[in-house]
Length: 422
Image 1: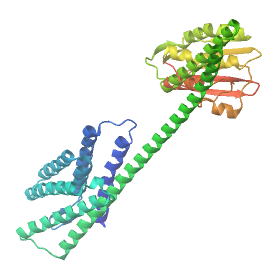
Image 2: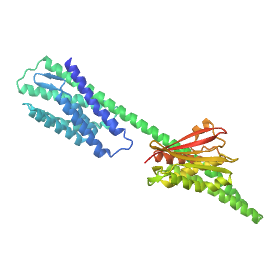
Image 3: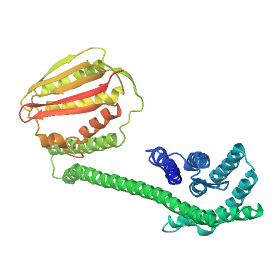
Image 4: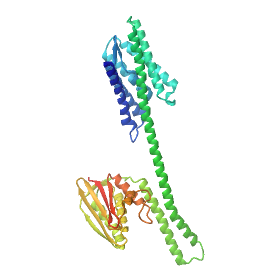
């Protein structure tokens, strides 16, 4: 019973490096060069596993310790390369020398004989390009354990030690345990790799799908003003068009081209919204600039502005990007009040968060419209593209903040921006 407990403990310890490798390496959002750091990591965790296996053999019979040191040694060669495998081999020899005992030379010789055997097996089978990949490491573990047991048998014969049925039975179990353990560990490794590859493929497909939809939407939105501009240019090419109509048509062509340029600018801002330089800025000063920018537009549409900002609202952001976001939200609020109204711009500090609210008393939105707000090319305005809101959401996100929207039909909309205080 003690042997079974020790064996299960060894198997458990051998699975820990696989989980660590998966958590700290394969599942990284940004991968580092595997050729340098990854193989070193494999060599280190396999070396630790070898030390544990040699310190806690699962069975001892007539002076021979039976442990699973071959498993991490094989894993180092298979998944970490020659250098990792040689590192683990060196650890086995040095640790056995540290433990002492008359069989040090035998252990060193056994390890030295196993290394070329393992390398030859890997090179000849080309196991990484075969399916299933689980079978070949399991076969290698079985053959390596058989070779180890055979060398042990020769050593016992040379030492004139007794060879009985118990010794042969334990040797057979030793080989079978190695094969099954290697099969289990290799299966876990391959399943983890397959799941990660599948997840990356799904993410790549989703990105391509979103990109294709967004590109199609941009093409559709740009095609409309280009079609209108082309039609007016065809009319202008006719000789019977009066000078007054030429001026009107030219103005319309310029407006449509400006609209197309605005769509492209918003798309580029959404595609690459990261601020180049984040610095400590005062939201109060940015709000004052916003007030100066939108005052003429608000007066032209009969909208009053209620400005209520607390001073010294310091955040880490980019001033130009923040103002761009505020202008988008304030402009939407003004346009949501076609019959006039009041736009509230409120700023204050709540604990360690800077809160900035832009409220209007306009037409409002339904819950479904609020849910879709910020999605590609969704807008409640007739000529809106929705890219302005997408850009605003993305800008605030790059500053580590968020935007919360509350709205009710015919009762107005409130945009609440939350930014971490400096």
